[in-house]
Length: 173
Image 1: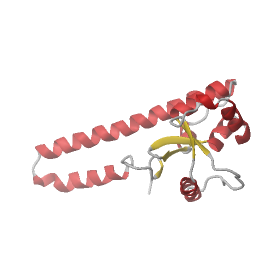
Image 2: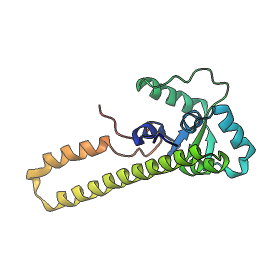
Image 3: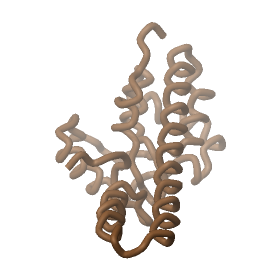
Image 4: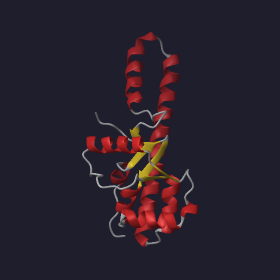
């Protein structure tokens, strides 16, 4: 694969659904350079490789939520689907490289795995930072309470949701 896929492009295609970070079949097909029909065909031929914690089909409510997220972010349209899309967890994406056996699939999977790792590191950093701030807050007197409250408010904006709320990542607004 001569062209490397930017991490930012992949990050925009990762969503939180059912408390898991997932990528949708259409987005993965686009990255792999195959049609969504072909990707799902290969998955169906190898269905034993994709248990429920690797891949699942979205409900209508989940799909509607993702459609509204995409329209807010002014990304591509998702019209014309005859069925609800499939969502692939990180493990499911890794398994795709074995059923889509091409050089491009291997390179795309490497880029996707690196992106998932980067997102995990970012979330861990936020958790560590929150703990350090709470420790500092216990040390210092009330003079710094306003500062700590403002920092906590900022951290809340970047907090990983307790339940699926949509796309992961930073919201610049």
